[in-house]
Amino acid sequence: MATDWDNASGFVSLESLEQVEIQIVSWCNRECSFCPSGTFPTPKVRMSLETVDRIITELEKIGFSRTIGLHLMCEPLLHNKLPEIIRMFRSRLPRTFIRLESNGDPLNKMERLGHLFDCGLNEILINCYDSAEQWMIRSQKIAALRPDGGAIWFWNQCQRFPVTEKHEWRVVRLRAFYEGGFSLKNWAGLVPSASSDSLQFPLQLSCNRPGSRLHVNYRGEVLVCNMDWKFEVIAGDFHRMGIAELLNAPILRQYRTRLAVKDRDMPLCRACDSGAETGAQPGYPPVDRWVGIRARWLDWERSWMAQSIKKRLRGMMGHR
Ligand SMILES: C[S@@+](CC[C@H](N)C(=O)[O-])C[C@H]1O[C@@H](n2cnc3c(N)ncnc32)[C@H](O)[C@@H]1O
Ligand code: SF4
Ligand code: SF4
Image (cartoon, rainbow, N blue to C red; front, top):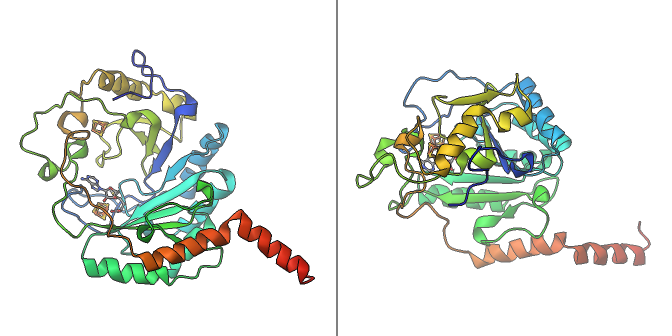
């Protein structure tokens, strides 16, 4: 595996930062068997808007325009100020791709999705953990949504992405988890039940996770790994450090140099199976061509040609 950093020093350039994953609340309402959530006590705390502001201020300094993930180690829809957080990112980092993953439980009203897209969200991946029926009901409700600020692309049922730039997307994906047969990861060693008996730990594998991503917990601290639910390895703190210092904090550089030579004999990595061969992963149900036609219509409506035909028609009819 090629690494994103200088192998000898562990240094990464500011330009190589691809993704910032943020834990906007400290907890989740579920206790999935393959996830560390609920296996140890956690206070229920929401990230403050001051901490959100600190993160954005640092990212503004490097003109960050890549991916913001708001679902790190939590259920993000539990934050009561989620629309405000999304608006802050959208207005101050306008070209970023803002996404989140959710168990969908707090979506008692699907209309909430339309509002999040109107605030500037680009993609939500909703995991359907319970049943095929749950997937079906959710898909019908999403297909029926008519949000204010523009169309919603229902990605699952046309299996492709919109034609516009990513910071303009409004995409919902529903992932099917209910059929068995897939395996999940024992990332950071916190989910031993998800690990294969045949593996010998520590694995002799590299790992890119501490390279091109920053993982920020609800207190504003930078973690080495996105599965460090217990905050065992903290590399820095947005409240005390700038982006350049955080991205090349000594602990991150140390992890990078050792992972580059496939040495995982360190806290978190020692019992982690990320990168190992696994069985089938959760997926997406098959394409429904009728809903696919609706998605094509949405693409067409957004396309440049449609806009220009509309403009001409308006001109011919004497409207502005
Ligand atoms: C930790 S969850 C947080 C977001 C939200 N609560 C959810 O379940 O979608 C983020 C993503 O990690 C996935 N995930 C959780 N535990 C995992 C594991 N042991 N291996 C691989 N992916 C996992 C979830 O399915 C989800 O897509
Ligand atoms: S996978 Fe998501 S929904 Fe399930 S316990 Fe973990 S954080 Fe919660
Ligand atoms: S090898 Fe280390 S950094 Fe990579 S996913 Fe596992 S625990 Fe995280």
